[in-house]
Every structure is written in C-alpha cells, then in structure tokens.
Amino acid sequence: MGCESMGCKEFREELVFLYIDHEMGQELLVACKQHVSLCPNCAEKAQFVQRLLSLVRERARRRQAPRRLRAKILSRMPHRRIPVR
Amino acid sequence: MQASTTTNSPEPAADPQLGWDFETAALPFLDSLYNIAFRLARNVEDAEDLVQETYFKAYKHFDKFEAGTNLKAWLFRILKNSFINNYRKKQSQPPQSAFSEIEESFENLVKQDAGQKIKDPEQEILDQVLDEDVQKALNALNEDYRMVIHLVDLEGFSYKEAASILEVPVGTVMSRLYRGRRLLEKVLLDYAQEHGYLKGSEQPSKMRSRGAAAGGSE
Image 1 (cartoon, chains in turn brown, green):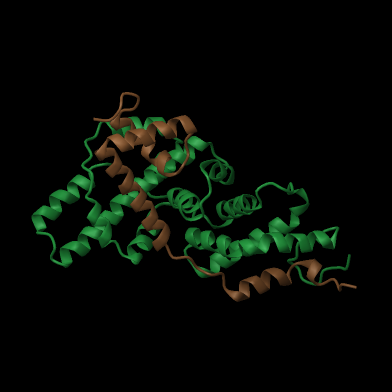
Image 2 (cartoon, rainbow over the protein chains, first blue to last red; image 1 turned 120 degrees about the horizontal axis):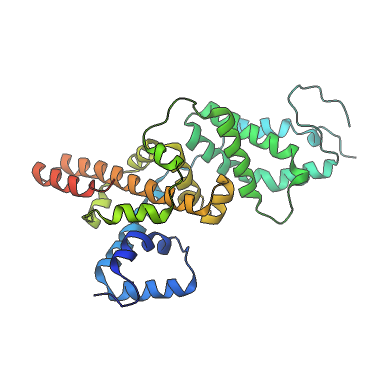
C-alpha cells in the first residue's frame, strides 16, 4: 500500500501537518498528493487533520475590539490633535 | 510641535503625515490584535491595555518600519513583546512549557512519537465537538502553544511569518504547532466523548478504552 517514494509512517506522523498547512515545496507536495491518492489510510488521516483544523478555525470565537478602545487609541495620537489647515 | 498636555502620549511624530499614514495602515488590524491580546491575557482589561500599549509603541517607532514589509506581523511582534514584558505571569508555568522552552527540533519530536502505537480516532467523533469545547480547549493550552496555534490556525500566518513574530526558528514554530495541535486534539476528543457518553451513544467501557487509545500519545 502506498508508493515507493514515501512511507505511510513518514506521511502520517510528520508530513501530514506540512501538507495540510501548504508548507512544503512543490516536489514534496506532488509526492504527498500521489501518496494520498494511493493510500486510503493516509487519505483518511489527512482528512482528519484537515477537519480538526477547520473545526478549530471555524469555531474559535472571534471578538470585536470594544469601541472605546479604538477611540482611546486614536485620542492619544498627536496627529489627531494638530488642526488640519 | 505642540507640547503634549497628557502624560502618556507617544513622542510626536516629526511628520504629522506619518501619523495619518500610521492610522490608515495600522488601525485596520485592531480586531486581530485585540483577539490575540485576549487569547493571551484572557481578560478584557488586560487585553485592552495590551493593545493600547502596542499601538503606542508602534506609533512611536513607525518611522523605523520598512514600508512594503509585513505590517501586520510587525504589529503582532510588538504585541508579543509587550505581553512577555508586562503581562506574562512570572510564576512557574504548567509542565508542558518545560518541553517547549528547550526548543526541541521538530524532527526529534516526530522521532519520539514514532515509537508509540497511536490508534486513530474515528472521524465521526469530531461531530460531537461544541463551540465552547474549542474555547475551553484553546484556553487549556499553555501560552506558547496557544500563541502559535492562534497565529497559524486562526490568523493564517505562515510558519515563516509566525517565526518572525515570535522571534524563534521555524523549527520551533513547527514543534510547538505539532505538540499544541496534538494536545488540542486530545482535549477536544475527550470533550466530544463526554458529550457522546451523556447522549448515551456509547457504552461506558467502550468509551474508556477508546479514550485510552486516543489519549495514548503524549
């Protein structure tokens, strides 16, 4: 199972994160894509990691900075106190 | 330049236009900066102070910022340093941080884990994860892991950008991400299993053995 140029172990333990993060060079990316297409276990692992990271990204609460904060920051900037002619 | 009447203003920029340029360029990142400030400080007051201080410092040093380079990363780096200098608790951190401080290389981490038999959790378990689980899980991580996961997974910085913000080697970013995500996965799966158990979808003995398998990697 899998292809000769890459081991399942290598992919599942190390490369999968780089793969999902798009943090690998073209050559390695092509090798990973090929491996994933040939190996159902590794494909499943990649899918799991992808789902996990997507879940974290989508569900982590994104806050808005309080209005007063923006006002406070701007009020302390001298250029805002210089009258514009 | 007019004398400042308030005690805590940045030194006036020699050129007011620079001030306007700063405002135009840097204020759009307010929400992003606030989010990471809150992620680190975990309360509104400190988060606000941290962001204010960041803009204060950034404004003051804006003349040194190289136009065309990554302003967002530059601002995040200033915030990171302000956090470390002023807000980071000086008391001893949870045990996990001891590993990250030694800056283990990514390769070593992988080698360590390679010896262990890890049973993969089933995909369906992710369906049980609730929004508040993600919040709780992120907050449970120590600052190093929480920070790098926020930068890469929530703000979309590349490894290289995260490394420049944190001022550590890329290998350190990779190893912290690796460990942090593994911990996050374990914690989320634990929560998911609890929900599943409460819903009555799993028998207790099955849950325990699956929990042991999923939690087998440390």
